[in-house]
Image 1: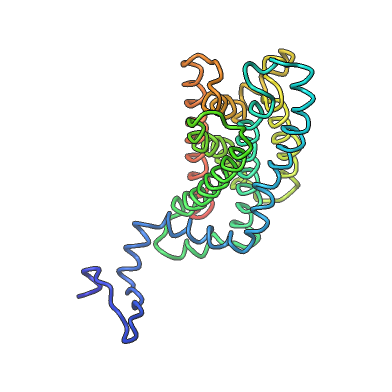
Image 2: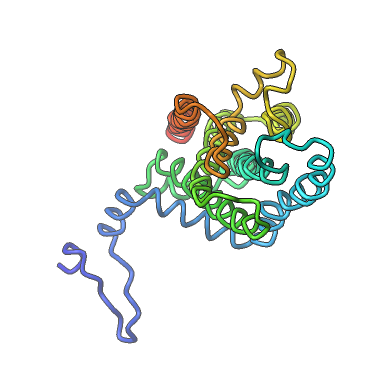
Length: 287
Protein backbone atom coordinates (compact mmCIF):
# COMPACT_ATOMS: atom_id res chain seq x y z
CA UNK A 1 0.00 0.00 0.00
CA UNK A 2 2.85 2.34 0.90
CA UNK A 3 4.48 1.65 -2.46
CA UNK A 4 1.30 2.41 -4.31
CA UNK A 5 0.91 5.68 -2.46
CA UNK A 6 4.53 6.62 -3.10
CA UNK A 7 5.28 6.80 0.62
CA UNK A 8 8.94 6.26 1.41
CA UNK A 9 9.57 3.30 3.64
CA UNK A 10 12.47 3.25 6.04
CA UNK A 11 14.55 0.47 7.49
CA UNK A 12 15.21 0.15 11.21
CA UNK A 13 18.38 2.27 11.05
CA UNK A 14 16.57 5.17 9.35
CA UNK A 15 17.98 4.47 5.88
CA UNK A 16 15.27 4.76 3.20
CA UNK A 17 14.32 1.39 1.80
CA UNK A 18 14.52 0.72 -1.91
CA UNK A 19 11.39 1.41 -3.88
CA UNK A 20 9.41 -1.50 -5.15
CA UNK A 21 9.38 -2.39 -8.87
CA UNK A 22 6.16 -0.54 -9.62
CA UNK A 23 7.33 2.69 -7.98
CA UNK A 24 10.79 2.46 -9.56
CA UNK A 25 9.26 1.92 -12.99
CA UNK A 26 6.93 4.89 -12.57
CA UNK A 27 9.82 7.11 -11.48
CA UNK A 28 11.96 5.95 -14.39
CA UNK A 29 9.19 6.75 -16.89
CA UNK A 30 8.62 10.19 -15.35
CA UNK A 31 12.20 11.21 -14.52
CA UNK A 32 14.30 9.11 -16.89
CA UNK A 33 15.99 12.10 -18.49
CA UNK A 34 17.17 13.35 -15.10
CA UNK A 35 18.31 9.88 -14.02
CA UNK A 36 20.47 9.53 -17.14
CA UNK A 37 21.83 13.05 -16.68
CA UNK A 38 22.71 12.23 -13.07
CA UNK A 39 24.57 9.13 -14.23
CA UNK A 40 26.67 11.19 -16.65
CA UNK A 41 27.35 13.94 -14.14
CA UNK A 42 28.50 11.40 -11.55
CA UNK A 43 30.74 9.84 -14.18
CA UNK A 44 32.27 13.24 -14.93
CA UNK A 45 33.48 13.44 -11.32
CA UNK A 46 35.98 10.73 -12.19
CA UNK A 47 37.82 13.07 -14.56
CA UNK A 48 36.96 16.38 -12.91
CA UNK A 49 40.60 17.51 -12.97
CA UNK A 50 40.72 16.98 -16.72
CA UNK A 51 37.46 18.87 -17.15
CA UNK A 52 38.79 21.86 -15.20
CA UNK A 53 42.11 21.85 -17.05
CA UNK A 54 40.46 21.60 -20.46
CA UNK A 55 37.34 23.70 -19.97
CA UNK A 56 38.82 26.58 -18.01
CA UNK A 57 42.59 26.26 -18.34
CA UNK A 58 42.50 26.17 -22.13
CA UNK A 59 40.52 29.41 -22.66
CA UNK A 60 42.53 31.04 -19.90
CA UNK A 61 45.72 30.32 -21.81
CA UNK A 62 44.17 31.96 -24.87
CA UNK A 63 43.11 34.84 -22.65
CA UNK A 64 46.62 35.46 -21.39
CA UNK A 65 48.34 34.82 -24.71
CA UNK A 66 45.94 36.61 -27.04
CA UNK A 67 43.90 38.81 -24.76
CA UNK A 68 46.55 40.11 -22.39
CA UNK A 69 49.87 39.69 -24.22
CA UNK A 70 48.70 40.51 -27.73
CA UNK A 71 46.21 43.09 -26.47
CA UNK A 72 49.08 45.26 -25.26
CA UNK A 73 50.50 45.46 -28.78
CA UNK A 74 47.13 45.75 -30.52
CA UNK A 75 45.83 48.53 -28.28
CA UNK A 76 49.13 50.43 -28.54
CA UNK A 77 49.36 50.25 -32.34
CA UNK A 78 45.68 50.22 -33.36
CA UNK A 79 43.73 52.34 -30.90
CA UNK A 80 40.00 52.29 -31.60
CA UNK A 81 40.23 49.32 -33.96
CA UNK A 82 37.62 47.46 -31.90
CA UNK A 83 35.28 50.33 -31.19
CA UNK A 84 35.31 51.89 -27.78
CA UNK A 85 36.83 48.89 -26.01
CA UNK A 86 40.26 47.33 -25.79
CA UNK A 87 41.24 44.05 -27.38
CA UNK A 88 40.89 42.12 -24.11
CA UNK A 89 37.22 43.13 -23.72
CA UNK A 90 36.65 42.37 -27.41
CA UNK A 91 38.04 38.86 -27.27
CA UNK A 92 36.51 37.57 -24.01
CA UNK A 93 32.97 36.86 -25.37
CA UNK A 94 34.51 34.96 -28.30
CA UNK A 95 36.61 32.78 -26.00
CA UNK A 96 33.56 32.10 -23.85
CA UNK A 97 31.50 30.93 -26.85
CA UNK A 98 34.44 29.00 -28.33
CA UNK A 99 35.06 27.14 -25.07
CA UNK A 100 31.41 26.08 -25.00
CA UNK A 101 31.62 24.76 -28.56
CA UNK A 102 34.85 22.88 -27.94
CA UNK A 103 33.40 21.23 -24.84
CA UNK A 104 30.32 20.24 -26.84
CA UNK A 105 32.57 18.82 -29.55
CA UNK A 106 34.33 16.74 -26.91
CA UNK A 107 31.24 15.46 -25.09
CA UNK A 108 29.07 14.76 -28.14
CA UNK A 109 31.57 12.81 -30.21
CA UNK A 110 33.50 9.91 -28.65
CA UNK A 111 31.20 9.54 -25.59
CA UNK A 112 28.21 9.04 -27.93
CA UNK A 113 30.00 6.31 -29.87
CA UNK A 114 31.09 4.84 -26.56
CA UNK A 115 27.48 4.65 -25.43
CA UNK A 116 26.48 2.71 -28.56
CA UNK A 117 29.55 0.64 -29.34
CA UNK A 118 32.61 0.66 -27.09
CA UNK A 119 31.21 0.67 -23.54
CA UNK A 120 27.55 0.28 -24.54
CA UNK A 121 26.43 2.45 -21.62
CA UNK A 122 23.15 3.27 -23.38
CA UNK A 123 21.92 -0.31 -23.21
CA UNK A 124 21.80 -0.58 -19.40
CA UNK A 125 19.16 2.17 -18.96
CA UNK A 126 17.34 0.78 -21.98
CA UNK A 127 16.67 -2.42 -20.00
CA UNK A 128 14.59 -0.30 -17.60
CA UNK A 129 11.42 1.73 -18.38
CA UNK A 130 13.70 4.60 -19.46
CA UNK A 131 13.11 5.30 -23.15
CA UNK A 132 15.69 5.85 -25.88
CA UNK A 133 14.56 9.50 -26.12
CA UNK A 134 15.22 9.96 -22.41
CA UNK A 135 18.69 8.44 -22.80
CA UNK A 136 19.43 10.96 -25.55
CA UNK A 137 17.96 13.86 -23.60
CA UNK A 138 19.74 12.85 -20.39
CA UNK A 139 23.12 12.86 -22.10
CA UNK A 140 22.33 16.26 -23.64
CA UNK A 141 21.12 17.66 -20.31
CA UNK A 142 24.30 16.60 -18.49
CA UNK A 143 26.50 18.28 -21.11
CA UNK A 144 24.30 21.40 -21.01
CA UNK A 145 24.81 21.66 -17.25
CA UNK A 146 28.55 21.14 -17.63
CA UNK A 147 28.82 23.91 -20.23
CA UNK A 148 26.66 26.23 -18.14
CA UNK A 149 28.80 25.78 -15.01
CA UNK A 150 32.13 26.12 -16.85
CA UNK A 151 30.85 29.27 -18.61
CA UNK A 152 29.78 30.81 -15.30
CA UNK A 153 33.15 30.05 -13.70
CA UNK A 154 35.07 31.34 -16.70
CA UNK A 155 33.05 34.55 -16.83
CA UNK A 156 33.72 35.10 -13.13
CA UNK A 157 37.45 34.70 -13.70
CA UNK A 158 37.64 37.13 -16.62
CA UNK A 159 35.44 39.59 -14.73
CA UNK A 160 38.17 39.67 -12.09
CA UNK A 161 40.49 40.98 -14.82
CA UNK A 162 38.10 43.83 -15.55
CA UNK A 163 37.29 42.39 -18.96
CA UNK A 164 33.50 42.45 -18.48
CA UNK A 165 32.32 46.08 -18.35
CA UNK A 166 28.55 45.46 -18.23
CA UNK A 167 26.48 43.61 -15.66
CA UNK A 168 24.35 42.29 -18.54
CA UNK A 169 27.33 40.04 -19.34
CA UNK A 170 25.96 37.50 -16.85
CA UNK A 171 23.39 36.63 -19.53
CA UNK A 172 26.22 35.61 -21.83
CA UNK A 173 26.52 32.47 -19.71
CA UNK A 174 23.15 31.44 -21.17
CA UNK A 175 24.02 32.47 -24.72
CA UNK A 176 27.35 30.63 -24.52
CA UNK A 177 25.55 27.50 -23.31
CA UNK A 178 23.05 27.83 -26.16
CA UNK A 179 25.97 28.26 -28.56
CA UNK A 180 27.55 25.05 -27.34
CA UNK A 181 24.30 23.13 -27.78
CA UNK A 182 23.69 24.63 -31.24
CA UNK A 183 26.93 23.02 -32.34
CA UNK A 184 26.84 19.97 -30.10
CA UNK A 185 23.36 18.57 -30.70
CA UNK A 186 23.74 18.24 -34.50
CA UNK A 187 27.12 16.63 -33.81
CA UNK A 188 25.41 14.29 -31.35
CA UNK A 189 23.02 13.21 -34.11
CA UNK A 190 25.94 12.63 -36.48
CA UNK A 191 27.90 10.69 -33.85
CA UNK A 192 24.87 8.51 -33.13
CA UNK A 193 24.69 7.60 -36.83
CA UNK A 194 28.28 6.34 -36.95
CA UNK A 195 28.64 2.57 -36.67
CA UNK A 196 32.32 2.24 -37.58
CA UNK A 197 35.11 4.52 -36.36
CA UNK A 198 37.18 5.60 -39.36
CA UNK A 199 38.58 8.76 -37.81
CA UNK A 200 35.44 10.82 -38.41
CA UNK A 201 35.74 12.74 -35.15
CA UNK A 202 39.34 13.71 -35.82
CA UNK A 203 38.15 15.04 -39.18
CA UNK A 204 35.41 17.02 -37.45
CA UNK A 205 37.97 18.58 -35.12
CA UNK A 206 40.37 19.51 -37.91
CA UNK A 207 38.00 20.54 -40.67
CA UNK A 208 34.94 21.81 -38.80
CA UNK A 209 35.77 22.93 -35.28
CA UNK A 210 39.07 24.66 -36.02
CA UNK A 211 37.87 26.60 -39.11
CA UNK A 212 34.80 27.74 -37.20
CA UNK A 213 37.04 28.82 -34.31
CA UNK A 214 39.40 30.77 -36.55
CA UNK A 215 36.91 32.33 -39.00
CA UNK A 216 33.99 33.30 -36.75
CA UNK A 217 35.18 36.73 -35.75
CA UNK A 218 36.95 35.27 -32.75
CA UNK A 219 40.16 37.30 -32.90
CA UNK A 220 39.06 40.08 -35.26
CA UNK A 221 35.73 41.41 -36.59
CA UNK A 222 34.12 39.16 -39.17
CA UNK A 223 33.70 42.03 -41.63
CA UNK A 224 37.49 42.34 -41.89
CA UNK A 225 37.69 38.92 -43.56
CA UNK A 226 37.54 38.55 -47.35
CA UNK A 227 33.97 38.12 -48.56
CA UNK A 228 34.58 34.55 -49.72
CA UNK A 229 35.44 33.55 -46.13
CA UNK A 230 32.68 35.38 -44.28
CA UNK A 231 30.10 32.67 -44.98
CA UNK A 232 31.96 30.45 -42.51
CA UNK A 233 31.08 32.91 -39.78
CA UNK A 234 27.48 33.29 -40.94
CA UNK A 235 26.78 29.57 -40.53
CA UNK A 236 28.91 29.23 -37.40
CA UNK A 237 27.26 29.04 -33.96
CA UNK A 238 30.47 30.61 -32.60
CA UNK A 239 29.90 33.85 -34.53
CA UNK A 240 26.25 34.10 -33.51
CA UNK A 241 27.09 33.35 -29.87
CA UNK A 242 30.08 35.68 -29.88
CA UNK A 243 28.05 38.55 -31.31
CA UNK A 244 25.39 38.11 -28.63
CA UNK A 245 28.11 37.97 -25.98
CA UNK A 246 29.65 41.21 -27.24
CA UNK A 247 26.30 42.98 -27.19
CA UNK A 248 25.75 41.85 -23.61
CA UNK A 249 29.32 42.38 -22.40
CA UNK A 250 30.08 45.86 -23.69
CA UNK A 251 26.98 46.98 -25.64
CA UNK A 252 28.50 46.39 -29.06
CA UNK A 253 26.53 48.35 -31.64
CA UNK A 254 24.25 45.96 -33.50
CA UNK A 255 20.68 46.20 -34.87
CA UNK A 256 18.08 44.55 -32.67
CA UNK A 257 16.85 42.43 -35.57
CA UNK A 258 20.33 40.98 -36.03
CA UNK A 259 20.52 40.00 -32.36
CA UNK A 260 17.13 38.31 -32.81
CA UNK A 261 18.53 36.43 -35.82
CA UNK A 262 21.45 35.22 -33.69
CA UNK A 263 19.09 33.85 -31.04
CA UNK A 264 16.75 32.30 -33.63
CA UNK A 265 19.65 30.64 -35.47
CA UNK A 266 21.03 29.10 -32.28
CA UNK A 267 17.64 27.90 -31.02
CA UNK A 268 16.63 26.39 -34.37
CA UNK A 269 19.99 24.67 -34.84
CA UNK A 270 19.96 23.21 -31.35
CA UNK A 271 16.31 22.16 -31.65
CA UNK A 272 16.83 20.51 -35.04
CA UNK A 273 19.90 18.72 -33.72
CA UNK A 274 17.99 17.35 -30.72
CA UNK A 275 15.11 16.13 -32.89
CA UNK A 276 17.52 14.36 -35.26
CA UNK A 277 19.47 12.85 -32.36
CA UNK A 278 16.30 11.52 -30.70
CA UNK A 279 15.20 9.87 -33.93
CA UNK A 280 18.57 8.24 -34.51
CA UNK A 281 18.79 7.05 -30.91
CA UNK A 282 15.31 5.51 -31.19
CA UNK A 283 16.13 3.82 -34.49
CA UNK A 284 19.42 2.43 -33.27
CA UNK A 285 18.43 1.40 -29.74
CA UNK A 286 14.97 0.08 -30.50
CA UNK A 287 15.41 -1.09 -34.06
